Amino acid sequence: MSQQLEAQAWHVAGHAYAAIGFQFPVFRLSLDEFPDSIFEVARGKQWIDERTIVEPREIRLPPGTSEHTRMMDNLTAVALCGPASELQYRGEPCSIERVQQFPFDWQLATESHSYVWSDGDFGQHMLERQIERAAVYVSHANTVEMIEAFASYLLEHGSMSGDESQTMWDEVTARQEARANRPINRRLFDLYGDETHEEWVDTSFDPDEDCDME
Image 1 (cartoon, one colour):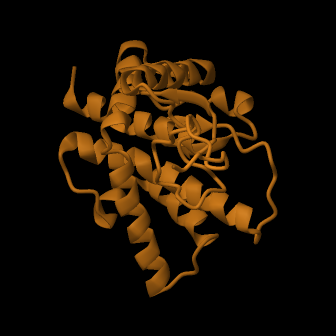
Image 2: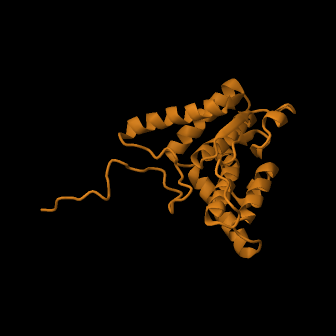
Image 3: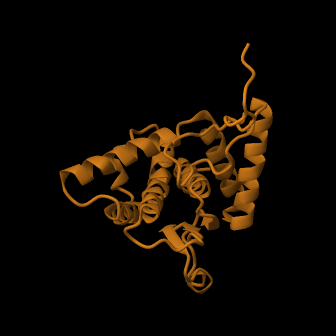
């Protein structure tokens, strides 16, 4: 099996990981470019790149609202996590110049990012920060395990449906929960939370519950 094909699988798997975590359910994944027939069945779906299609969010958020801004920020992350995952697999640094080598991903990342930050030096700085965050997201041990599971499935079967993707996510998450002996936030990144980078959430303790102090 060629290293290029494996790197491509890690790329698609990186998108899948981020999409499900950011609440954009996967519609279809493929190691090959989709055939023309996909355009009819994928009408109204969100294309991440030529091998990754996700479901749009069910809730329509008006542009300009804080919720819409956060959603577009998350979509930027979904676009960037594919290149970040492939670059990590290749052992290459995740920089803005290297991400630009992936035109489909780069176009979506810049378009969604423009809803959050205006053009200019500061907007460019914030996009570079998003790229750095994507590299961090895909380097976590649990994330690598998840992405590797998706990549292995894609290498064996060539494609993946939305249901298969969600099943894979749930199975790997269940293993990680059992190993850690505590719950994992299955949403992974809370669209409305302040700490969107937080991976682990311990739900066994109720902060509102009164504690007896001696």
